[in-house]
Length: 271
Image 1 (cartoon, rainbow, N blue to C red):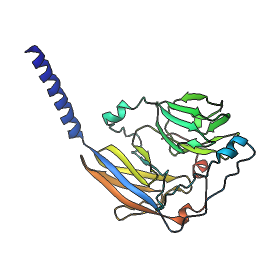
Image 2 (image 1 turned 30 degrees about the vertical axis):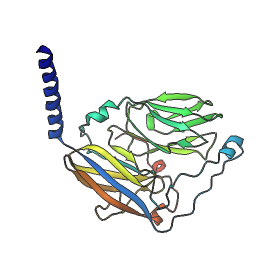
Image 3 (image 1 turned 60 degrees about the vertical axis):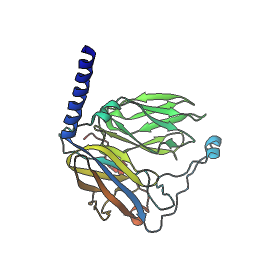
């Protein structure tokens, strides 16, 4: 009987916790990004004279499209009002200490864009048989160090960054990727098919930022369900237990035509 009582207590406790979670309310944000118009000409990388890199043949990843012109590597994240502390879903808290990996592979950064929370381990790996000199400008937490062949190094960041920050290699200047450092977990990168999803957002009204390395802010892009403003932001309302779908957001090819360095024009700084 005592065992049964303990079992009932555990079950009841779990039900109460689940009910409390449901009362607070969480929802999902989804959408897709596609290029409207003829795609711009692909850029050719100058690989220099490094034999390994020349054999690896890395490609420019500043604009990655699939056959339907869906856009990969768009950064989408929540922009909370300054000073506001967001509720964080328990599923995210479970993964808060899980290391994120960023590899130097085939003389390219893999993945091209990586997201990491403050305090979460970032493991910089080098699976190449050649060394890389990895550097990134993140204000007081900038780094620049050698990563030996098949070596790795772990970092953690204390300060969130207002924008994605570039990461590069001093030895191989054509190598470039991006790091997104945020205080909260509500961020994602569009997949190869242009789709994106942020699960378990707190219910309520939020401002969502859209950013891509070529133009920076994805300004004035729209779908049937949403329209981004001149800074690539849109207000959304998250309803408990429901999905908010922004539809297929079209990005004019003129916005992506010229490669630029928008993040470099703004200093690395915390929120």
